[in-house]
Length: 532
Figure 1: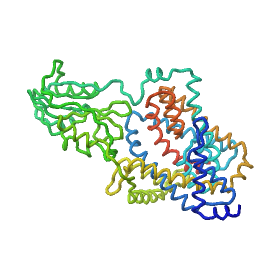
Figure 2 (figure 1 turned 90 degrees about the vertical axis):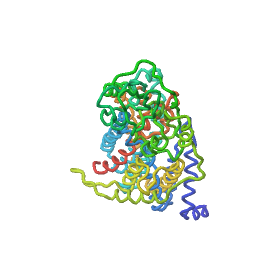
Figure 3 (figure 1 turned 30 degrees about the horizontal axis):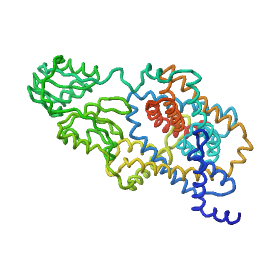
Figure 4 (figure 1 turned 120 degrees about the horizontal axis):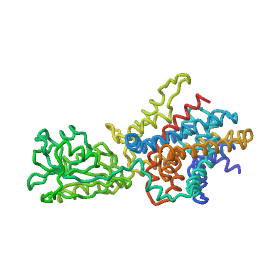
């Protein structure tokens, strides 16, 4: 026993011992549910109770790496989601955090719990590690981790059971409910193709770019027909009266274009088919995060993208939309051009994991500096975003753009996971050993009250959010559950949701709600310090 105690007094041995046993505990499953990385936190608390302590610098290093990886992952979706029709899912994620905060305040007052312990219960009830990180920094009290550790298991189990059992209680056919309910990410109509004759004098000798600026239509002009000739629709293509154009878009956009330039050609359009429609899948890592404007597809390859399919839905392509792996592009080009386009977007073999140390370092430095800026809140006091919030905000912004000068933020996806997972377990190991020093005293003092409080903070947002999703936003049950899992930051919940029905709809709702919840739980953890 003395030998083991001596070995664990060595920081490196202690760190890897906590990671080894903790990760083993996290992998143990019961009916498809496991603790995951939180097993490291729980085992760290046990060793912390016996006096073992992982250096604070290790915990802070892990926190920094984890937060930056999370921000870079959320960045590409966050701002695009805000501007899209999927915003309703983000609003639901935000409302879940607001409801959880109000419930947390009531629980803290009702059971007379300290602010750090109450906030810890909230982050555990919402299974939010970034929230835990922000709360630890804001309170500077390790007791936050105790609240998190106690509430976390129920938070995981409750969301999974809610997703699995609630549809059965309601006795609803999920597929029928999904089909009869209009999703916020679906359009009421499908993309269509229309041939339009140029008849208006004011369009004569205008370029396609000038035409798009004049009418503000989202329809894409894929080709221009002049006699027996067939041109690709480029920005600098000049239109002449008597030309016919082939446009792709939603009916409302096509109608706007038709009124502006002439009338629809209802007879068969005769032209030589030297341009063909092809479907190309985005799979090359170098294209992930880039947009049509950056790669200059029309200028360099004489190719027009008419549609973009993502998650089973078709959209008019925007020059600002950033590509994601698995996007399907409908492109119009000559047969000899398609091979070059397929090679451009096709998969390329990666020989190594591309972690860009310079970029990680500069993002962290800027983030920490931003986190130090004091923010004055009238009536509440002054707060800062801190080591957790500052890097998270900066990483989300840089992740959205993908590259700012020499800073690169689009890593090969496994690289980002490596940074995130290593950072997470180092942070949880340090937080666990620190919190373990007061673990027994807190449980002896508060006892069963902590479990009840955490359960309340989990259950109230779950049920309230479901009612709001159905009654206020009129979402389908499957979209409601997906968005709730995102708002509760529950990946196990999403897994259970995916098992209910063979569709990507839950993942779409989850992906839209998750970034909003991620950011606001971090902010809320700091605001509650000033309120409680």
